[in-house]
Length: 430
Image (cartoon, rainbow, N blue to C red; front, side):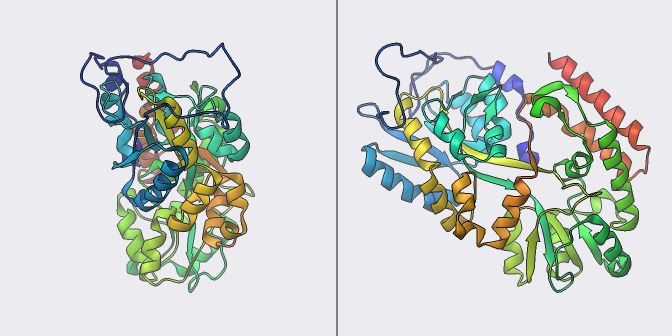
């Protein structure tokens, strides 16, 4: 999650858009593209959009998607006659690189990054709206995924995968997934053995990415208006306070350790050795637990006081570089890679959780119990806010959680102090 924490707006505003040589698949150097409305002839549709003559494209994608991209590029080139070059680059690094390489004409034409970077990329003018394929994307994409790739009512992304966290449970220790936290609390009374490092449940305590779920499930939130109003902060409202109090209850009855005593590797070791019965984690840990030979299941997060537990979620999508010389061809490629057919192939090849509603409902996907559980949890998730203002949230709220968990301090005063710090930080950036 540290890799996901925001990119400073100063990195964007300090850009000097001077002319320099164009390269790669990028557009003319030193020029900021201006959207022009086509007032002549019939409107362009997904079925009539054609690539520019002589177009060649570059796409940035993650290493673990290389086999999928290679297959799709071959099919795309056969269909449209447009050569595509794949360049390996982690999605979490792409907005940073696009900030400098986009205006310089050196960036890829199609990029991919976690949705919480849309705000920064949009406000810096780095990406084009998803206009031609807007209706098709809205019809086919799950609601939470669609929200995630939309910024200030403009659809930018071509979403292809979703992720969130859910509950892993060791079937040898807890055969049936718990429906509520009351069950976990009761189980901890007989299973916990702190001297021998045996615990009923763990999550990465020091990461607000996970702690958020406890505040949000009681009615807390970060920003109002579906995460788009930074003047409305709900991290110290009545629901958030109830969530903080519940965290203190869990510390006393389920996980009596300090925040720093739990991290990913510690949890993995305990779960793999049979000393940890349940772990709140994401799909990225599936391979580790399978390789450890554990008979585990995955289920949606347990309810808290009868309410579904709301997790943070992320969405990966393709975006079109605003400086590309070939916007038509780039839009076609982004749409092709995120199509229903492509998302099904990506699921089959890489186990990616699809953003497309039809793919998610396919018997092949629903027949996989682990995928089904994550998708069900995703439907109860909150997309991470994409406002650049999120940069001001992580530090203060993480400190508040430390005070609440490690220090046993008053929940209301701790959360009030965090919100005060967030507001003060935001005031300096206006």
